Length: 225
Ligand SMILES: [Mg+2]
Image (tube, rainbow, N blue to C red; front, side, top):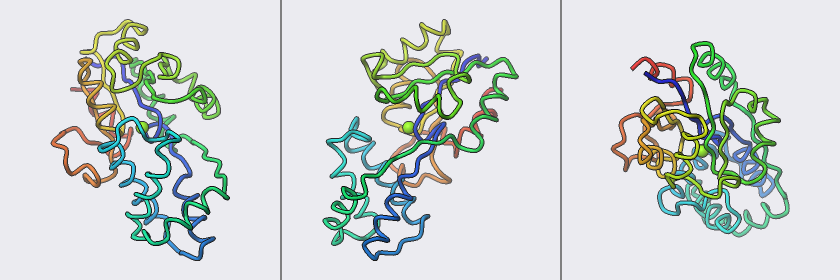
């Protein structure tokens, strides 16, 4: 019986405007790309970094390598230098906004008596992002790496969350989009895990992991198992 569902934050409960920023910088360089092409390259670059450079995504030191990979996926490798300069000049402000379905899913779970929590690798801006999106009040427990002093996939961050909530791992589901941080870590802590990926297995072809879902909208059907 599932009593508690834990969520990752980035690309699980909230999305961002990265692809739109990249598209604009490219357009300023005279390179026209459709937003879905840029979104696809963004997805593939994320998956590559999750697999090959664990712990680097979203951190300052990994940015250059990340943008180079993104340009490779856009088949614009020769434009990389100009793109990097363009990104510096743009000084982009990334914003994180909840998906249109996030509130509905969380509210329906609560109505059925299922509690929800957050386990996120995030810096000190995490609570602000939650607050701005009205998500703080929808979380029964919040555990953030920058506050906890350990980060996913370290099982200690999951165990800390379980202890705070007073639940057993067997009563929980964990949902996230990063196999190497989310699924590996939560499984090691004894939780069943669902992995978010867009339709199909684009970018995660190497994984044998069975429980791949398209978004948190698919979570509810796993709560009856
Ligand atoms: Mg994520």
